[in-house]
Image (cartoon, rainbow, N blue to C red; front, side, top):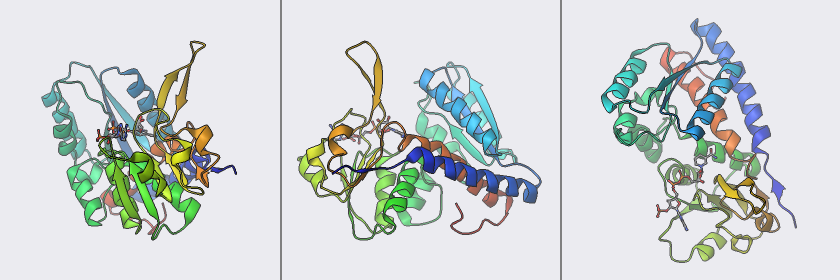
Length: 296
Ligand code: NDP
């Protein structure tokens, strides 16, 4: 049996188109475009690529994107001062500080300084608390993207066994909260989990967010399970080239699973699409413009 391949690229493209339409309507209603401010400190190559993609995607979705590029020597106080200016700027609906930050800056202090109503990354403790309490708030983009793909595949998730491998604040923990809110029975596995293969074998839904190339093997997957692979790992090939792989051994898992996200082209494209979606939701809330419930 060969699993359905979940086309995150196509899903993300359709979400971005919808966001673009809502952004155009918002600009007409509010008399200004929705604004997303992205802050990049230093010149980490991967971060620079992500920031350029976010900039391009904002423009395509009718969102006014501004990028604030600061030198790697920026102090915490300088970054806090920029965040304070962006918090006070009524043309900015969403603020994203690209991580990781240089070592002289306390990441948690910066996240906590962002206005929770502009925290489109959903990392602020207030938004983490809202998610845990079942209240409206911003949900981190990658896990929300995974949930959208799961609901598209399955409709209701109620009663299903979900195993999330990884417990980071960015992916694993919010993913588990989202699945719990959908009435899944949720297990969070991590590096101290005693028998990871047996834990994963229980799952109707597996979300892998580990950062270890192809850790999860095909024979760990329950036949017919839905596998969402968040991992993005670049590995060296014998011919001297490199290749992107996920946290799941795709070639093995595709023979057993019911559906699976590929890497690349699965979860990856969803992250930016959901960032744009969160920005439009923020713009409507900040400007007091109504957004049809469940529209995005
Ligand atoms: P972190 O490094 O913050 O967390 C990794 C988690 O995996 C930890 O909870 C860790 O456990 C657990 N883990 C590590 N090794 C093992 C193991 N051998 N067995 C079981 N659990 C293990 O990573 P992130 O959550 O930030 O990212 C995870 C992956 O997702 C990465 O590949 C990253 O590149 C990718 N990613 C992709 C995104 C996208 O847009 N598609 C966005 C964000 C991340 P412990 O807590 O015990 O240390």
